[in-house]
Amino acid sequence: MHEYAHACIFMHMRLRAAVAGASGYAGGEVLRLLADHPDIEVTTVTAATSAGTKLGQHQPHIPQLADLTIQETSVDALGGHDLVVLALPHGHSGTIGDTLASKGDGAVIADLAADHRLVDAQEWASYYGGAHSPAWSYGMPELLHDGEDAATSQRALLSSTRRIAVPGCNATAVTLAAQCAVRAGIIHSSNLVATLSVGYSGAGRTLKPHLLASQAVGTIAPYAVGGTHRHIPEILQNLRVAGGPANMRLTFTPVLVPTSRGILATVVAPLAPGMDEHSLEAALAPYAHERLVDITTAPTWPTTGPLTGTGRAMVSWSIDERAGTLVMICAIDNLGKGTAAAAVQSANLALGIPEFTGVPMTGVNP
Image (cartoon, rainbow, N blue to C red; front, side):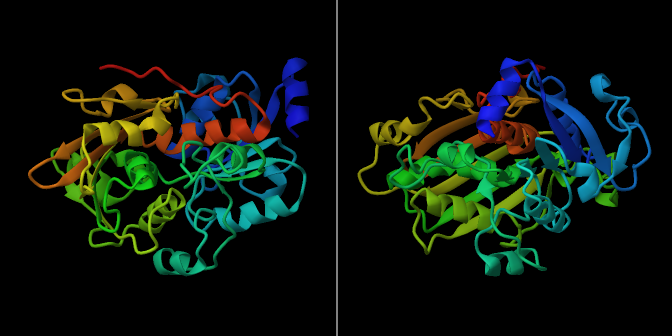
């Protein structure tokens, strides 16, 4: 397929893409990025209740695709494409994704839901319930592997797959904040504490009373408190890939803040004895050549605003000498690096397209 993709690009032919869940926030952000992708053309959009209407009624910010008619989501509608993006609710994409995969038509399938993220069926049952779908290649090219080399890097895995499980947005922020420290062994990763400020678009587009502007504006509201958030096993799975111990524990508290987009993750862990600023610099070395991860130092802390609409992340670490802890901060756009930009970045690798094609780098400020 890579040879085919390169041949198509050389001949100025664009690969065909279908997006399921096209009327939602995640689906809309994928469509926004693909609308300007030089090598991919969106030819099919599907959804449930909005089927039969024009995409422009639901995503008016994407005029290039406004005249596409939304079809019912089905295997038949999604078949026959080079790329299929499933922006469906958890529990819905597993069956249709597995059915599409079984057709064997060579399409790259990127699932934005959680259905194909977890390796452990018991963890899936505990946090999601229902049938467990097989884990697909995890769509975070920057994910570190313990003892990583070219043969085992996440990019190598994505470059040889047709099935991508796009990470959860909160999982992305915490993983990018902490994985270098876990891999380098500079913290006691058996006791991680993560607090996340999360924009309201992370809750999706479905109308719910607590998501109304009259409820959200002027309010800071925690949710999924006490170890109940579904991204916890995904984060631990990632950090174990990076070298974390089997007994690693994570206290995870997300908090809705009155902004549309963005996640600011603050992760705190006890610092290993003898660690100093030089230890931090050495541990962060894997990010030195990561185009989408910017390392900042005091007094420039990560903030979400400059990342709005981008596929980038900002990471910063600081030693709390009195508490004996390392404070690790990561900022992302939950719909950008947290979802759609990660999907496009990973799909590029799977399709044999240069990795950062169509991934926005420039933010909006203010």
